[in-house]
Length: 389
Image 1: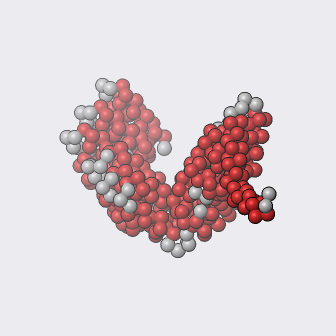
Image 2: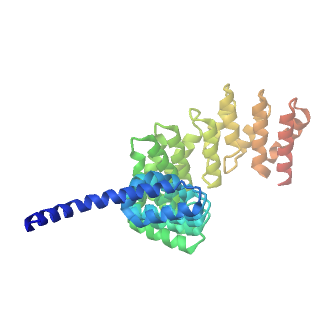
């Protein structure tokens, strides 16, 4: 063969080599992928291990590797997770599936899943599951997830409230350290709460709701977000309003604007009575005074609207500090025509305890004479709760 022809042939061979190698690698990955369904765990583990060695070139096997993530054999799961980790960004489409294993009941699988998500580097489908996994019982898992969230930087802003709580209160030193480091990488301390609270301005209701809810986890560190939370007390969505009021109560029960806003919601009969009662209970637990709402609630307890009356007597029992006017309104409600109102009033007085001793004669009469056995039981229980406190 002439020298010139040999050179032409060599050049053609060299040009074809990358394509040929790619085709061979893809074919090899596909063949290994088929073995992930073999009945023998050793065969499945071997296939996954060899795919892991291919790194990004194993991308053709992503569908089969995704299915194999739920393999009952730990060695297979671990090899599959290693394969995804070695693929890096090429496995971005599988990040959501990998994240499912953060909730697995085996710690090593959970930690390997977190590591894989870090190397895949796709915050979009990863941050929410990682944030959820910060609640895991295992400190090592919480720490691993915190580190990954920190590595995602500003994309992990949604995790700031929970990380703040872990940095301050987690029982494991490793978790506290990992959470603090993650917070520093996600957002500077100054302005951090406001950046999280900016989600309250979103046009998307689920985003506003999630923001209002999660801010509570920031505790005292969330105080800079109070102005935006108070503004959210008037959000068009009821869920957002109550979430914002609940978080604000937990963060800053001593704030004048929070107290005023919460009191307005609790006494507003246009709001859901059950949600108002839940908010009143939170106010009680966090020592936010609601006694300023007693006159309005006492009036509501005499309403012709049964639901309004029921809501009022329940909330009157949760008002702190306890006032004589609240106790007297509940005593009066013990004579209501409604069985529900009488029973709820008795229960509310029992919840108040010794400060409701003025109600003992009325409760004694009720538990002996009411025509409804359920009301008699509520009255009896309240009588003894008050009398023994």
